[in-house]
Image 1 (cartoon, rainbow, N blue to C red):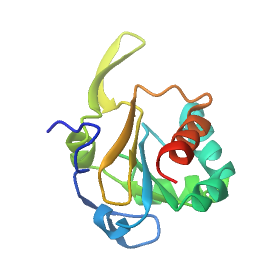
Image 2: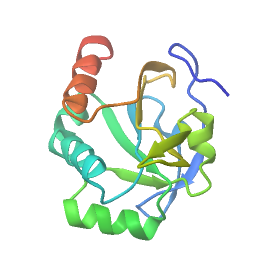
Image 3: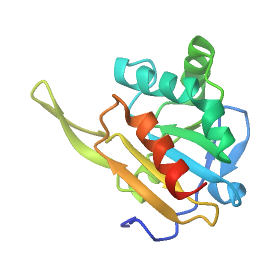
Length: 156
């Protein structure tokens, strides 16, 4: 499946860190920052999550919720949330079905090894459930500010 800016965001249901199953369509009427990240507790993922945490109120002021997705199990998400005081939901995509829907499950290379994993990406979904902006191969530095600025200028 190919997701593109201007198309309806693929709906899904995944277990969430709040103990419930979360469905993307539950958030119709709000903007959604849906971000995919490789792994809890790693340096880049921690920086990104903490950047979203630190700007959480500014996203809320724009009628925007933040949802993070990785293949980690809920127990690991819980530790990540507790350690860093994350005020938003993390979803467990252990079978990487949603990552595949959004075309972020990719062949990666690290230290000469090849493996399948999440390619860091962010999708900004508008109040009607349409992908307004996509960021692929995200570099963590300044990314959260860039996403917030996009929402302020285009979805406020």
